[in-house]
Image 1 (cartoon, rainbow over the protein chains, first blue to last red):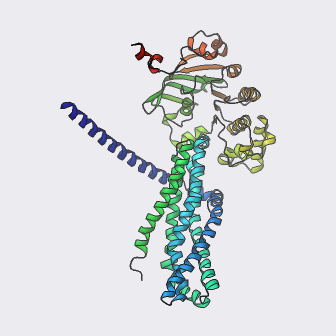
Image 2 (cartoon, rainbow over the protein chains, first blue to last red):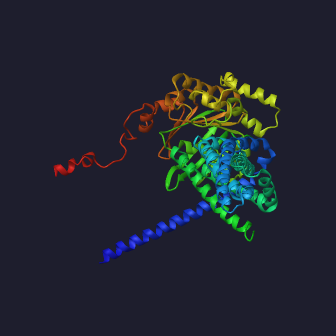
Image 3 (cartoon, one colour):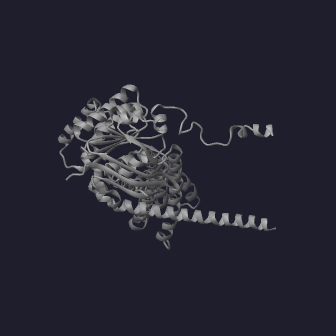
Length: 272
Length: 270
């Protein structure tokens, strides 16, 4: 009997220890990530003083993402044109197609889909690059040369991502609207005048466009911060870097969708 | 009066987690000398270099470089001190997104306000010293292992440091590159007045160029002396190491249960 009791106590103790360990590890990681994020902000001076470094990273994460963003934007807009027309036609209000396409894009699809694409295109690349720089001791070498890798490597990539994201989202929305126009007006034959004029009268700069831009800036911060953290924290092995890259895409996509819900709840509450 | 020793390590212990890697190391490096730190793989040699570079802090004891105790420095002072140090990583650790030229120019651009044409001259001089002036525009991916190591050496001496640390400079090199690298370390140490710390397990190559050798095993210094002392040493560990014997104080077999038990022979016999 006492043996069974001993065994039970042992299992229970193990379970509690595991729980404690995981909690401690979780708290430790949150603390580490927060310190990492603060260090980026603290060392952001270099990213602006030597803006060339940031521009260079904007080329890699922003300009090189253009193709996927523009093509996706065009197709999403075209699909919106087709689907929107089908639905609106039922109520005899095809002219409102311009409103539907534009509002869907600038409020939601532009920032969110562009952010998801950015996370998988640029976020994964950032994580893999930083992770490999760490694995091949380039970051250590930089530290030994008295250059802080956070200031020289991490901060410029962070700000490049934060600046690129809203620009990409805007381009996504613009090509999407053009795609909707191609399908709705040119292919199906919705009246061109009402397509554009209804859009212009219904889309509000502050409520719709500015809120969309704010969303995409927040997404930019989240994605690049996650990508940089995962890369910097990656175990310096092949599996470590590949695991970190996967985590970046998964975590930043989920973060974008969750943040989108929260931001939408605050921004568009009570709007008609 | 200037201290004769550039690096002084006193009773330093360090561990990763619960595993103690260094257990009380004492070591000094005199200015102008090439010092080798030898020992088998995983004995804590690289850890020792990282301690001297201030990348990790010792759990016990003191590391002094140029008279300054590293554990008492804040990050700014540590970075100031690191400008006097160069480090050659095992596989070069060149920045893969920059050309050979930009790699060597990196510190000059980060730490000095020199005009670009002066930087160009300095970089070409350093590259010439390692025989790779002609490779200035190549990318690191186009270099062989030996060339990458030499570029990294040019980069490490770009700011004319007082101390250069070499982490396994001979690992994975062909015989020609091996000789070239060894000679370079000796020649640069003498001409630039450097102090070189070479972490290595390549006995033959390093004994040709070093002034003094420390042997590390099990986290402590087990032997020290000049190259001749080491060659003549009759300490079992040093003898095994220098002559590359398969068995000795460092056993061939990783600790394991008796062979017969593992094969199930013990049970049969019973």
